Amino acid sequence: MSATSRSLLEVHASGPVTHATFTAARLDESNLYELGQELAGLVERPGQLELHLDFRAVEALSSAVLGKLVRLHQRVGKAGGRLVLLQLSPFLRDLFHLTRLDSILDVRAAAPDERGSARASA
Image (cartoon, rainbow, N blue to C red):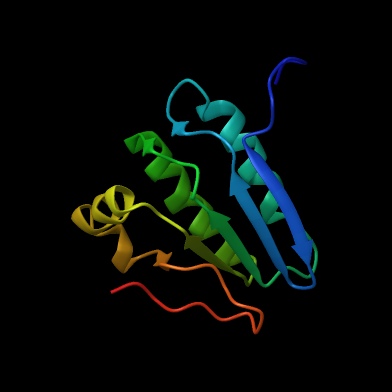
């Protein structure tokens, strides 16, 4: 990543949960390498049980990014954790449904409340 690029994720860790919010509106081939690097760094946090990815700023993503998310899901699972996707726009929720990735990935409609739970999307 060059000195002028900004991070694609804002990351906050609290106990066993890491919450990462995407800062870019488009996740595609133009930022795929940087995204892969940042996501890979999230898997290796000691004691992490859940990795929450917040998509509230994301308007569009490419099929290559979908593949990265599936691989991230596998890596987090192998490390004993759980990947949770939050705050997807209706368009992105439809995309995950049409590709049937919502049957593989934990896609939730809302961010966790103060008790740490989130309602699953319908």
